[in-house]
Image (cartoon, protein in one colour):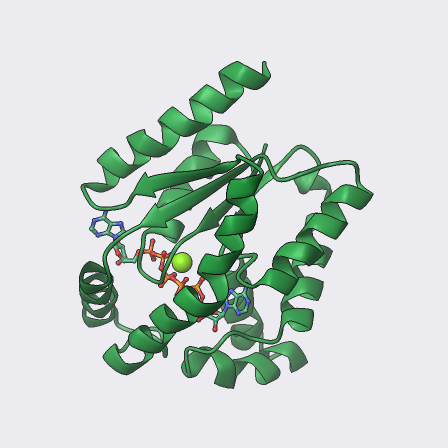
Length: 195
Ligand code: AP5
Ligand code: MG
């Protein structure tokens, strides 16, 4: 199964993705984690992306697409994967489609996490307060910018998936277990339908 997780910063994509990949035994491909790993490793790519991340800005599409494309050809992705944080722009969604179409495949499910902005800000700031080494983008100024970027660049790609009838809204407020149950309902229904 090929699943795409879409949602604003702090919506719980990472938290719920970790649970869902366990449930489905597929790899978790988090674009944010991939970028942070590049920074950590001090790679050339890491040096290029560091400033974008700290400022809460998206990294250039081409760079992101080439990182994800290289990951998707790994053998563990052959029977499915969960994409967390990618695609985030229209050109990224188009690039993903091209990659999948070339392989005779398609995205099966898009999960759209819905959480009001006030709760998102609280979650991100409390994560920063609890961490010994908080993320450089987990502060009040940046989180509002990340939210704006989500509204302007990412939300519009959902229209494209809705038209294909594969987009499912997930209410992201509630306990983590409640949210997980909502996600399982969608995934189980899909599995029943597709045999
Ligand atoms: P990324 O790492 O993807 O960050 P993000 O989307 O801003 O979201 P977060 O990881 O902060 O939130 P999340 O939805 O995963 O929530 P989480 O589970 O952590 O991207 C970072 C940056 O990388 C971007 O800004 C951009 O610069 C760059 N980037 C990434 N992808 C890119 C792309 N495709 N193109 C270009 N640039 C890209 O939960 C948040 C907190 O809430 C946690 O503390 C958690 O414990 C808590 N929480 C979770 N669920 C609940 C709940 N139900 N109740 C209460 N608390 C909860
Ligand atoms: Mg995340």
